[in-house]
Length: 135
Image (cartoon, rainbow, N blue to C red):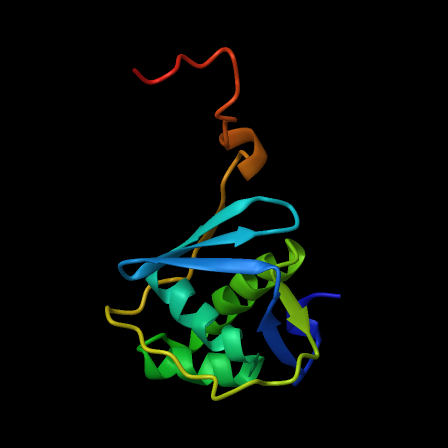
């Protein structure tokens, strides 16, 4: 069942997800799968709400306050579904604070991009004999 079919339940960022902010955007690292995800500014603003737990209706209302047109609810739901499909969201979480965030730039469609290689394929061992030693 998708996040958008869950009704009024609270959604939250999975505790196994680490966020690194890069200016107005962010990179998420799923510590279980070791995959990285890039999200744009609008996506990062939504994820900030999810860090404390937020209802879908509250996310939609906040997006409208940021300048999203009413028809953007569908793309916001797609964004949330994508995060949930990859295990980055948990459903039925207990809110841990106020679900608020700021969007420091104009509203745009929230985008999440999963990187092709997981962390273990990117990292190289310092003891790998095929890598020359620093002199």
